[in-house]
Length: 311
Image 1: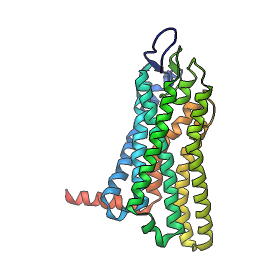
Image 2: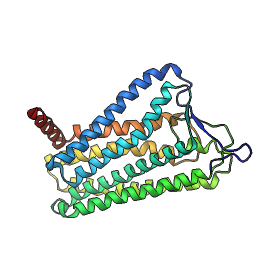
Image 3: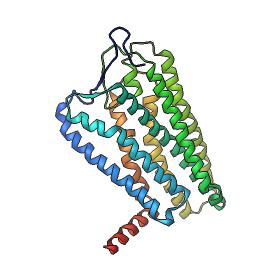
Image 4: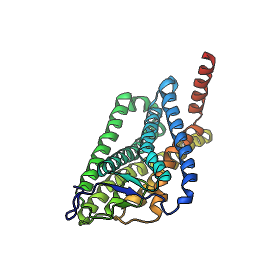
């Protein structure tokens, strides 16, 4: 429970953000606001396109639209609070608000982690078993895999929140970050966090390890199949699809491992690293998947053309 054993209940936390660099606040606010609008526009465009275009009603694009939804929600959990921090001298958040933000942060982060792994498995089936792809990746299977993503992520988030709820805070109450997260909160605790810290790392580590093993196995098999069976033209197309996915995986997993697979120590680099997985990944996912995918680009052009003709 978030309370002070001697001075009573902690009523608020203060998110410091970039308090030590006030001259950058306005510039960063404008930049981040523009990026957030692009995140909303890009991800909503993908979701609408996949939903309306029948040619994109396959497992690959189904999961792509779900990734866009998760990215949109993920950015919305953190970016508005970061924007508020840039234009205010001190950004106050209640303990309940802090825990709520932490819960949804890990909910959407965990969902994206597992969803990227599911997308790698989808590419494995498409490249290694193309003749059976439609039967294997049926609508029912897609629904079950999506349910798995959300169920595992909800359990992950609940464990994180329950552990944070056990911490005692006796001051200071200043969180040296843009938003509430595990490490910035843990370093403020005045209680023993050794066991809780082990649970934090084990909880995040279990999801990361399982996803990493499945991703690694999928791509080893994919690369082996590509090299052995594809023509030069097919080789280029298959590698192009895989490279897009690997870029997204690297941008998301790399910073995540740095932040969560270590003890609760606050580093100056944490704020910058957090920008990668909370802002850049949701921004780049639509760009990577649309600019490198001719089907999606054609579908977007077709939708825009239909709208213009109907006016």
